[in-house]
Image 1 (cartoon, rainbow, N blue to C red):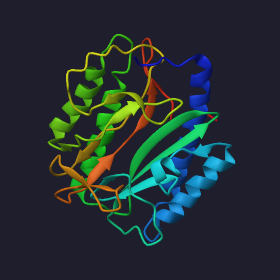
Image 2 (image 1 turned 90 degrees about the vertical axis):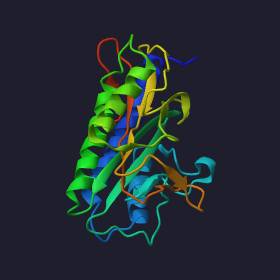
Image 3 (image 1 turned 30 degrees about the vertical axis):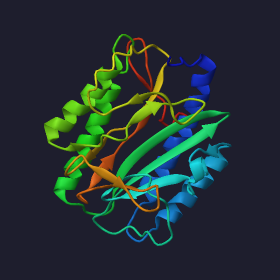
Length: 250
């Protein structure tokens, strides 16, 4: 059973999502060659706290940061560190959650550092395209597999690897709620209903699908060490069109 969010819950999630969007605006402004991922984490922390929210990730199963910062072949869950310095040509995925009055907003974006390889730039463009393709299916009457299939179709069009072990998820009072959303078709016939909220997050690789977890027990990388991109919005199912909650409306 997937819970439908009330109007009051959605109102609070819009605030949480706006805070996430403010963090991403700051990330875009501050990501440059020479900055550390720990510095970015501190910026995110201050924005979240200044907006009377709590960093959702900080302390989650022991995670030490307010953001996940994943560079190049790192897919997700990269730990912010003082010695992780961004270089020209890097890409970095910033994933951030904010909890406001008990409701969560969750969003990720992959940023370029200076000039990147055209093949990598195209990977980012296709992953963002896959995100919005999935979002477009978040209307009442569709099924969950319509969302998965829209993402898969864009990935296949670009001939990119699809991360299989990780995907989107319901979100609300907890960061991870039902349902789990695969980024490829699995035959899930769950009907989408107005008020359902799902974090849609395609993760596409320049190489193969396969990933592995490093010894820090958090950082996920591609097995072939090829770059990976990650984009995410928290989205509510609407009667006629989806509502993206992780945009700055404050």
